[in-house]
Image (cartoon, rainbow over all chains, first blue to last red):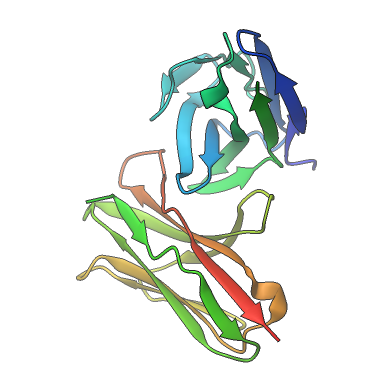
Length: 110
Length: 110
């Protein structure tokens, strides 16, 4: 099992650009989520999904969209990147309340 | 009051020392409790679950005190490789959404 995979590992964007962070898991977990982690702020939930076709907002959803067309994939879209979205992004899947994290995407918005 | 609170540290201890961290939570309906370990610039990984009866795994012991609403992590015979940030995670009953503490930094020095 590859577990949770994320691409890209690193990304630099200019303000106003859009992009999609990819996340996939091969453990057949229903629950998936996206977090951002900033120094001193801990992990903050952006969006989550409890199954294919179902998504909901977390603590900091503004500026991000998600979709869940399959159990395996949960992409995160930045609509118009802003410097405030410079962060490390982690995707996670969950089973029995245990979270399995991907390796993260380090995003810098100039 | 934050839902899950941890002392950010850093806890600076010599090899071989015993060190303990506490994590307090505000939601008395919380059902599941976990400790995660996060190495610098890496994703969080599950260290251990915390059961009502406590949980021990080698040098690591986790305890739950429901009356005072805190969980603890005890590390005996600290190793240099234990240096990391330790995240407390609490799941409210009936919710998929975990609440993460901001983490406690541990530095073990020779």
